[in-house]
Image (cartoon, rainbow, N blue to C red):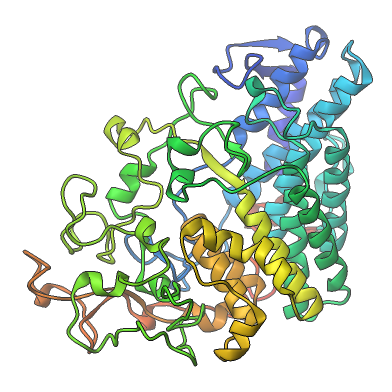
Amino acid sequence: MKKYNLLLICILIVTAINISCKKLDRLPETSFTDDKFWNTENDLINAANRMYEQLIGYSIDNRGDDNVNQSGLNIVSNGNRGVTGNSDDWTVPYRQIFTANNILEKAGKAQVPDAVKNRYFAEARFFRAYAYAALVQKYGDVPLLLKTLTIESPELNMPRTERTKVVQSIYDDLDYAALWLPTRAALPAAQYGRVTKSAAWALKARVALNEGTRGKFFNTPNYQQDLQIAVQAATAVMGQGHGLFANYQGMFTHDGEGAGNTENVFVKLYGLTAALGLTHNTSRDLENGRIAPTRNLIRIFLYKDGLPAYNTDNTPSGTKSAFFVNEKDEINYNTILDNRDPRITTLVYRSGEQSYQRAWVPGTSLGTRSAFAAKKGFNTVDWVTNNNATVHKPLIRYAEVLLIYAEAKYELDGAINDADLNLTVNALRTRAGLTVKLTNAFVTANNLSMREEIRRERTVELCLEGFRYNDLLRWKIAETVLPKALLGAKYNAAEWVGTPAASLNLNADKILVVEDASKRTFDPGRDYLYPVPLQEISLSGNSVVQNPGWN
């Protein structure tokens, strides 16, 4: 950690700060020294804009999960991840924490009413909490820094702070943020993208669910307190007038952008005229197979009668749908996609459907290594621009808040009533066009597991959005799920034009094997936490210690 603290101290010594304009719509354009800055509300807005710019938005990093392949084995999935010298997983959040702490220490001198100061203090504390949430999720205990440092600061050599204390600091920051941030309804349209009370409560609910479920399945005392916090925080968001966007696929295209879509709780803005000149390349990444859905994911989708064929850990379900087609049979490419939860039509392209450059033809040369071509998040307008995509990135959706509420209620009480299921899981199903509701009677009649069905809904609704790997960790099932083979589409020579079977790795059922199980691993004595970068240990004078199993 010290390397980056010293870098930031140098920034303090030269007392320079990058400035962006009043709205989140232009690049940083000049620098001012501290004595000429921190004086007006415009200064506070400009300083806060840096936190929005630092947000991680679209990225390619499947962390070795089972639902997506990024065009080959990575060091997480094959067990070759080692202890690196440094890692963005550690340093990027600490840079964000420095930015927030700097605002909290200096913004007090601004000649503005206290209510205005508190608004931007609240933004800073939200982003500090957001950064610490990322650190705790990956590393557990981490050094808790609530101020900027000098070259004499003893905190340069501080050890890791106990996880529960860091989490309490996150809760405290978010409580402050929720007190002083505007409501969703009160946020001016011109300020769309800035954080609100809803974002603070939603982040608190996300962190609390992570801590509560991880605590429950790792046998940590008092996990119930975190689950209760998750329920309370999610309930607070549910009282803010949010709703689900009518078109699920539209959530991930330009159709879903703007304040009129109240499913957007917290977004990363992109666009040459909309957000600090930031762009991305997600549609091209989808075309090039860097975010490729697997058969493992498709198996989790329900059939239209509300029944599954597989569980969320990809074990066979005890109760199979009448629409289930045995994969040992000779079936065509689209058969596995037929009669399913309608969200599957937004996940992948069907054979013959117009896709990236042409009608989709199963294969592994264009679009995917799994032969399933990802559709979710693809924008033709962005694809044409090539490296200048501007569709915004939803970081917290109201759909996630509903799923947090349902899961936290069930894990807290061991049960969930039908009224709460209608508010949450069934609201998502209705939006998707799946007519069968999840009820306690349905679960009992079909010998299903309510926990499993709530997890299924989360997996399907949030697929390809970066949640799966951590969900497997906090549920403590990663050691079971991750060492299994990653599968792709069923091979049919008549449809796979130009792709001979001999060129593929097919299993006995003629299903494409994207990654063989022998090349995938997960060490339960080590991999439930990330390795602390060696540089942070060394530069702390060994006060920062390594996570178990990584020595």
